[in-house]
Picture 1 (cartoon, rainbow, N blue to C red):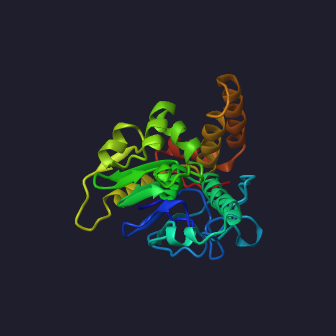
Picture 2: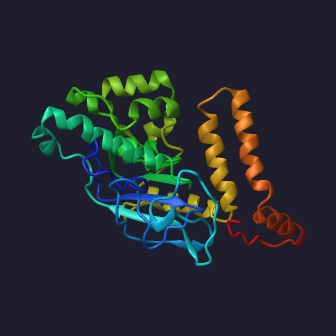
Length: 287
């Protein structure tokens, strides 16, 4: 699986297929001390696009949930490439677990995936290989999913007499609808890229290339479309969409109004208007 899957160790399912990648694009300062939440530590930087943007919480820890827009003076990474290999569930290890250990173990996985979903930056899952069980749950926690036609994905836990435990029973219905989600979970069916696109599980499907990274390349193309936009606007847009989808329309519109208000006093908003007037590209700083 590619781009959204720096998988949680021992996640429910497989995440292999050679490469697992996450493109976290736009508006996040990911400095030397930055880490993914929970156990997803020490990402290896690959291709990055630099600009000024956001600050993490004090001490270089994961981005704070308060979504503060404080700005640092140094350059800040706005797209981070993470690669991990074969970080899915080790079912042989699970067999050895005491039943009392399983619940807390799965709870930790769920917490890590939730932290991924709450990152205040757009995230893109690029599935170039397998995303089964926990691998797909992690991809579902990302904002956008793209896949190669040869990719394989599914929530297959019922084959093991368990259910998805990393958010799959909640995020899959929200992504593709209740009836289809039930069908896929009840059957433990595995979809290829075209089938996933047909049900709305992924936004784009591409024929796999010789390098085996067609979905990842598409994820980078999408990220490059996101990067020029205002960092604060990107942050609050994600917040408005995520929170608005959980409430009724009237409440959602109130959330949008509150999020919009956060952009009014920013220097970036004035820079955007000035750049439009001067017919040039804006130079946003996340302020």
